[in-house]
Amino acid sequence: MLIFSDYVFYTLAAILLFAGLRVITARNPVHAALYLVLAFFTGAGIWLLLEAEFLALALIMVYVGAVMVLFLFVVMMLDINLDKLREGFWDYAPLAGLVGALMAVEMTGIVGVKHFGLSHVNTPALHAADYSNTAELGRLLYTDYVLPFELAAVVLLVAIIAAIALALRRRKDNKYIDPAAQVRVKRADRIRMVSMPADVELPDMPEGEPT
Image 1 (cartoon, rainbow, N blue to C red):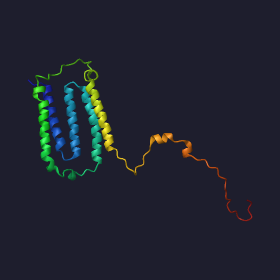
Image 2 (image 1 turned 120 degrees about the horizontal axis):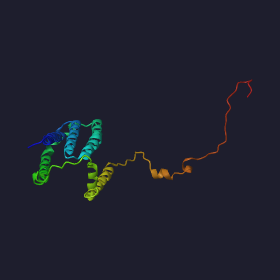
Image 3 (image 1 turned 180 degrees about the vertical axis):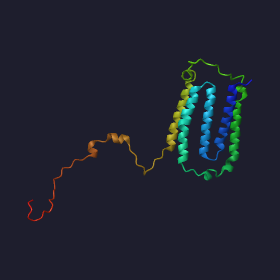
Image 4 (image 1 turned 30 degrees about the vertical axis):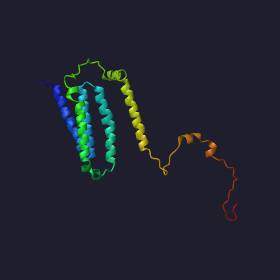
């Protein structure tokens, strides 16, 4: 028999699937970004049903409050030519459909009833009022999952370095400052004291006036 939480879950799941489909089918990139925000909110609602309040709030504050707002600003500020982006769409449609089908089969095989059915994943037990979801998550990350956590941090660090290296473009006409050269500069390199005799030219005075 379905209970109220089951109805809430299926409602949020339907909204999440609809928002995810609209992200990839919306013609306007701003609309796609807004549908992605809706997907994040509904995903946070599912996290709340699983009593993962910290993850739900982190999803809203980090992704919706920071990443997506920045993404919306970038999309709205750029002059994107949608007609040019659609050029060659049907040429790559068969390959894209094949890749999408393979990904769907892989996801179904991994996240399927065989491994994630009701017999394998039970409803989370209710916790006391003083239960701290954040403390429990931290304990699991730094004890049972410390190695995957550190590996994920290394992968993210490599991704940051790769993004900087790909975006770095050295141009000869750019003006840049070398901090090391600035630190090595002495006063004598920038300032030169010159002693010059005073050369003052008196203005012409009318005749008869004292100088």
